[in-house]
Image 1 (cartoon, one colour):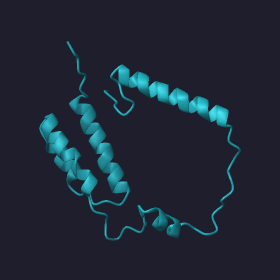
Image 2 (cartoon, helix red, strand yellow):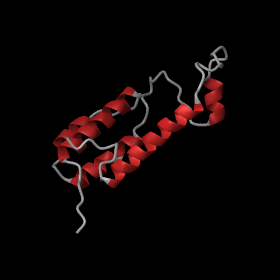
Image 3 (cartoon, helix red, strand yellow):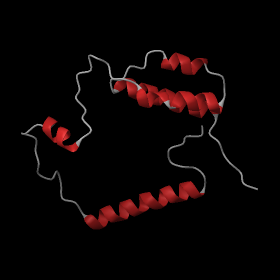
Image 4 (cartoon, rainbow, N blue to C red):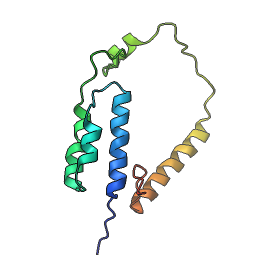
Length: 121
């Protein structure tokens, strides 16, 4: 018998509230989306349909930030006077150990069916 642990409705609603707030902070038009979320019935299907919508929210017309996706456009937006020197020396052995520990922690979480991205409340 396989036991699936689904996130609670409270957890999913909380995560969707965070996503909507993040999209608003990033300059996207999310008017009414939070109220719509609060009015939805507790159903995985309805929450899933709403969860897909923030990916397509348009940017506000008065949004002052330019956020290109192509590498050349990103380089074009960079300040030519920005510091390019390393901030600090990097110890590759130390970094390798930290990356390995993070990876193993992620794998253990997946094996235990508790991925890092879920807060089950």
